[in-house]
Amino acid sequence: DVLDAQVRRMLADPKSTALVDTFAAQWLQLRNLDRGKPDPERFPAVDDELRHAMRRETELFVEAIIREDRSVLDLLDAPFTFLNGPLAHHYGIAGVDGEQFQRVALDGMQRSGLLTQASILSVSSYPTRTSPVLRGKWVLQNLLGTPPPDPPEGVPPLDVAAVGTTVSLRAQLEQHRANAMCAVCHDQIDPLGFGLERYDAVGAWRTHDGPFPIDDSGTLPDGTTF
Image (tube, rainbow, N blue to C red):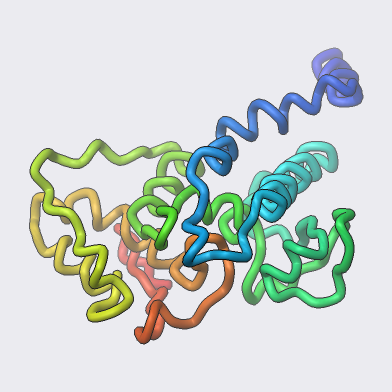
């Protein structure tokens, strides 16, 4: 009873915003939004103002989970988020205008929870393209607490110029995974990342990667398919 009372007292204090400003920013790697800006030629609409809105969405979302004492599972599939006009436009969600953030109900078709927020999708991408490997690693490390080991030395890089032009990113990574030494880790990493491929490198919804239709299906290590 004493512990419960003290926790509620501390949460009511303005200093409890550190749970979002400091803890959540470190845990979710939100600070990386300012370190690796998207390529302006590929994503000309993503300016500093929009990236700030991306971060603010996640901060308000995490704060709501904490202050409303919601289930931790809502981090994955909460039916709401916080948007202002520019970010709603980026997501293709109608009915939200102006600079002020407002709570928005979601239908769960394209957005729900942390993994569909542009901040998370951006920090787990490269400036020019998505990375199922980075995104899969982000999920393993930050949500499941099972970070994969560092890659071995001498792994050949992807042919970045070919991605989305002459071959799909998925096809390239499947060739990479054909190497048994690589498959040990990538069988755990890649399916999680492929599941998020309908979001581009700045979190906008898409159906194609260049001319190639997105295949976001996958199989988890226990055989579960999605």
